[in-house]
Amino acid sequence: QTLFPYTTLFRSTRSPLPGTVLSIAVTVGQAVKASDVALVLEAMKMENNINCGKDGVVKAIYVQKGDNVLEGADLLLIE
Image 1 (cartoon, one colour):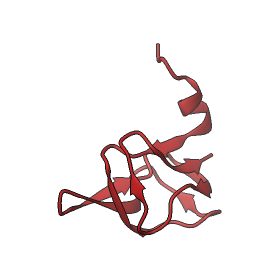
Image 2: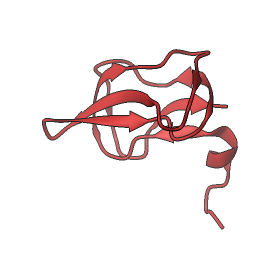
Image 3: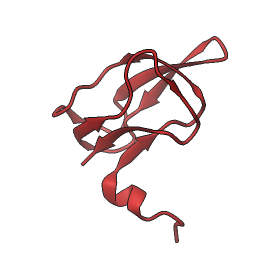
């Protein structure tokens, strides 16, 4: 049982660590696989590929290149 079941319903991809968005590899309307790289975050001078995490279609992107994000921040919405 999960504490936040709505996250699986809305399929939001969240940031696993705090960092800066270096690049975004997906666009709204794009079909993606769970293993596709959605964006690249820089954390502690290291580049981290963030995967989509779920198969589906990108419905919204909540960040822009250069944004600073916190751990757990919503990055994009996949349906």
